[in-house]
Image (cartoon, rainbow, N blue to C red; front, top):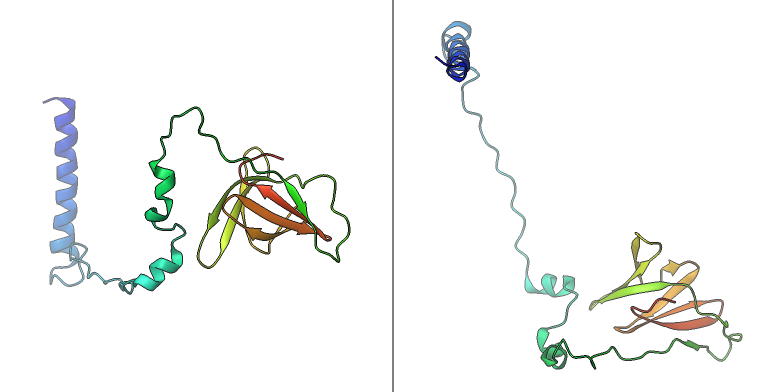
Amino acid sequence: MNRRMIILLSTVGVLGSLFVLDRFVLNPQGGDNLAAPVARTERPRPAPVDAAQINKVLFLDPLAKFEEIWQRPIFVPSRQPAAIAVTPTTSIDDGPPSDQPPNIDIIGVAIGPTNSAVMVRTDRRTINRYFTGEQINGWTVEEIKADTVTVKRNGDRWQLPVGVSN
């Protein structure tokens, strides 16, 4: 016999001895033994999700809305994103706008039917999500569009382009 066979037979012998000890010595009547099956309890099933809940959660519009975009060829040298200039906007009662735009690196937006979010890179490895009305480095997110995010502070309003580092 080789070494593996000896280990296998030893394991079978130990397990068999434990089974016999449990069945006949410790519980001869068969009540409450360790080999008895355990009753399973069923977990409650969640309620089915209706279409209204699904539409409330989804962020993306139907694909038909983007037909013009996905029909364009991808690998064409002239395919460039539209140029968006950072422009300060002020209301009548506010002071003059700041000379420098806020140092906020917007890398993306998610626009939904009830709320929208903006993804901002705060350092090399950290990306945070902000909703309308929240503050980023003292600037309040006022409006989120597909290509720009409007922020304000102390009367200054800036429209920052998405995907362009400031």
